Image 1 (spheres, rainbow, N blue to C red):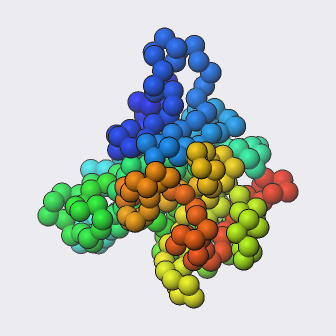
Image 2 (cartoon, rainbow, N blue to C red; image 1 turned 45 degrees about the vertical axis):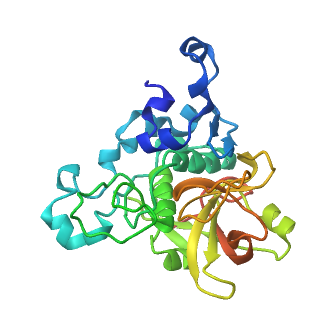
Image 3 (cartoon, rainbow, N blue to C red; image 1 turned 45 degrees about the horizontal axis):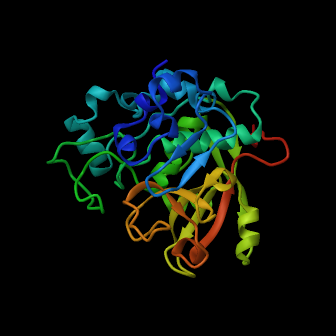
Length: 301
């Protein structure tokens, strides 16, 4: 198997790395399988399970192949047909089947797989695209974003939708308002649906943190009392920050600073969840896919 770092997307390599990258090759060969991820911001993630155990199928098989992300063949991604039918959004995502690697796994493992899957896209730009590695030519229609140009990347709800699709074969609507209202989602290729448990958030900040779990989808209002405009992945207990701030993982624009006051680049990044930030003031509710009591997906006939 190739090294973990060799299989991370190039953009993620520029923005963040698994800590094992810094070790000499000889040391890496004898080290235990890598369990951590760190970013230049100082934010990171420490898993309880080795990364290859969480996302080995994404590192070794076509499930993690960037050219296999869309519902149309890669050779047609930039065709006139795709331009006419899908415009600036590009081709829709492939519907991944439920992965065999997840069979029989506990809730903690499943939640960590969500974050490990999502971290592979750290450094991708904020773009209004359906799939992350769709990189259209300069003359392609484009919805202007903080990226400053068209290129690889996706927006907040396409990010969360794609991550759960690729990680578990769960299909959710990628429109952020519709995604926030879901009560169940389709399990690709099966005649069953996945129950999304709606988590009502307490007003108290500490109680709110205690109510959330790794991998939860947290929805954010555009302004207090307004409409849902954003969604993030809650990193939770496996997040690491020098300040002790809880972390989220999302595709977002600029305007968020790290603990040193440095701007965090727009796009897919680890970001802090501060009580008086936009995230903290405008948090609406959350969705949970993996239940606490037994770790099973809430399947329905």
